[in-house]
Amino acid sequence: MTPHPQPPERTATPREVPEGSVLDGTEGTEGTEGTEGTAPTLPLWTLVVPPVAVVLLVVSWGREPGSVMLALIGVGLVGAVVCAVHHAEVVAHRVGEPFGTLILAIAVTVIEVGLIVSLMVSSPETSSALARDTVFAAIMVVCNGVVGLCLLVGALRHQVVWFRPEGVGGALATLAAVATLGLVLPSFTASSQGPTYTGAQLAFAGLASLVLYAVFVFVQAVRHRDYFLPPERGHVALPVGPGADGVQHDSRRGALPGDGDAGAADHDDEHAAPPSSRTTWTSLGLLLVCLVCVVGLAKTASKSIEHAVEAVGAPQPVVGVLIAILVLAPETVAALRAARRNRVQTSLNLAIGSALASIGLTIPSIALASIWLTGPLQLGLGPTQLVLLALTLVVSTLTTVTGRATILQGAVHLAIFGSFVFLAFTP
Image (cartoon, rainbow, N blue to C red; front, side, top):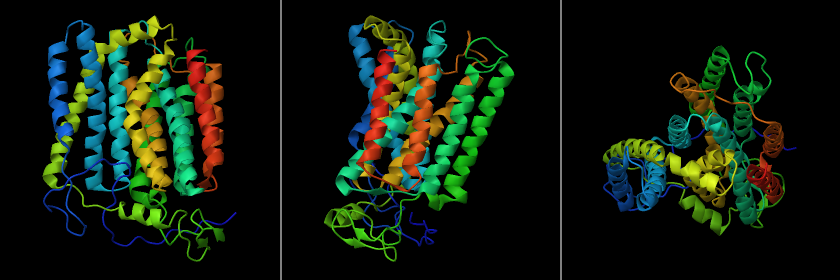
């Protein structure tokens, strides 16, 4: 196994764009010293969707929506989710990496918590396990579906994809710890009946998850920021041999796989001017508006969502799967775009960071909300889910330990994800 040397000290370079950003257009050069090009503007749809969502929320609040209104609410809800993630990308572009992926992960988690709490408030008798089902689904979707797709897409285009195992490994270790505290131990404690925690146990698990996530954020953003940055071109130690483009690589001066003409084109896209201060503050305000609309519209449509699941004869955990897929869809697209550009490190930052934020922030939030919620809060996983979680953590560790992957690892993760989806509908 080729050793992984410490990455060189990064010199001042233009601010990196979070992979998958859909920023486009041009604007004045305010706040763009030291960058190339002009600052991007906000697309028109990102300015139109938030006020439309507000109107839908005001019109439908406190009423039983009909078929037409329910369809409009569904469109507005999806639009608000996509718009929220886009504005989070704009703010992330301004602050740079790895803060960019961190902002995206937190924004998605806020949406997820809002959806969970809205459904639990509206139907406390049938949603006692909704938090568990949603968090578990988020882990499965991210660690198997998103990671599998990114590895497969990247490896199909570049044969071998590279990333930093020291950063990804630390994130997986944190994820394993908080997942065990939040989803596994409640099935084995003896102080309360069923897969639940007592109040004191829930408070401890929530606090421990929050502390671990805070330490992870500190390591990612401050202490060991370089562990989570994409490997530098021309500074990565690779084994001797031809790369995906036929270029001879060696450990003295390693060009990343795919550094041919396509790689050069991707490299040109990696840097762009950050948005202006005005654009950034506008996106921040619209982001908050979108988050409020997502929570409100989800509460309005919560009864209809549950009735739709019952109508097709699907089990109740399917609601959690639908929530996880909904809130993670825009981030999945961003991760796939990064993988196509041979920057799988950014894809893994988005994917595993989202899973970690999902459980590290959702469990404490639900624990706090349980003070006002009625009924038990079921957190412990069943036998089938425990096996899938253990398999996911073991395979993820084996995938990332070498710092490189091929289509085989992508296929394995997708097979586990397929098993999860199948068993969710036919337990």
